[in-house]
Amino acid sequence: MNSLLKSVCLSALMVVLFLSLSIYGTGCSIKDKGPLPSAIQQKEVEKPGKEKDSVVSDNYVPAPLTGIMTDPANLEKRPVAVMVENAPAARPQSGLPKADIVYEVLAEGGITRFLAIYHSQDSNNVGPVRSARPYYIERALEYNALYAHCGGSEDAKKFVKTARVADMDEFGIGRRGGAYWRIKSRKAPHNLYGDTDKIRQVSLDKGYQAHVRVPGFSFLSPGEKLHNGLPAPEIVINFPRRYSLVKYTYDPKKNLYFRYNGGKAHIDNVTGRQLTARNIIIQYTNTKVIDAEGRLDVQMIGSGKALFFTDGQVYRGRWEKGALRAWTVYRDEQGKEIRLRPGQTWIEVVPSNTRVDY
Image (cartoon, rainbow, N blue to C red; front, side, top):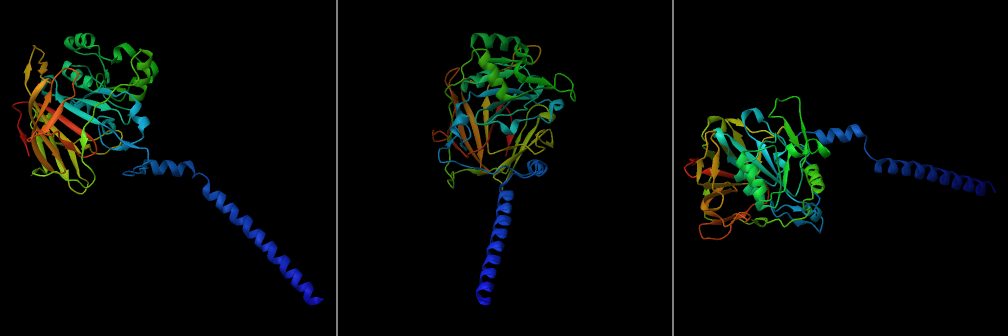
């Protein structure tokens, strides 16, 4: 009897201990599955150099302008082409790393200006936004893009009307929908910024198309290499003014070109990181001064010489554009359309007599 009683008591004790451990274990499990404290999450987000984990779904497709795999929903959006200032007072700019393509072209006075094309991703803080010029509009038309700017030359204003540009001029929009705003830490005209997604939303109120056909580049497959290139660890573009001089240096470990402007590392004001390019295209064009203000006529329609830099190598070729809204095609010396490494591409449009050292 005593043995039976001891056995029953021992069994009961084991059941109690099992239930206690189960309850405790379940509590830990639930706690572990819960969200991290917000302060810890914020710290991780702001940690320098930390990037979000890349999650590639089976239904992802390559973005036409970068070749990077992305959700097809991101490609349903209409591209936004933003005029971004590059005078010394405008540096560091904001939002350029988010662009799929960045064009750099001379404006008047030997100063360059950017046209940033946003398609597969947006920037909620891009700028300083500046005024329009006709030859930048021609590039925006290639992408069927909304054209974001603040005012423009008289020729540009006329061109906007005659070419039926999807015009998103800040002068006509103001603060509507939070598309544009000015900051107090910089003086006008170097203090206007925009949000590409909100610019797109406001464009719907203006009756512009939400969905358009977007052209694209051809890209190299992972592990695929180009042949017959020459080493190009450094590129120097000798724009007319010292503060406009551009240099790129190649980092073989990251397979990126790091950008310098006016003798200094060119920094993004949002991330604090140096601007980089996966591919760089130099496009030589006929360029001439057309008025007393030094405004330029840059021939974007036609053909001419080009240089292509990727993977630390340089390749020679040509560019051609047959009509106003036609896509500019870049070809190698054998006449084949070039293929780029997936990533952001900078297109440097320079006068035909510009010296480019590499």
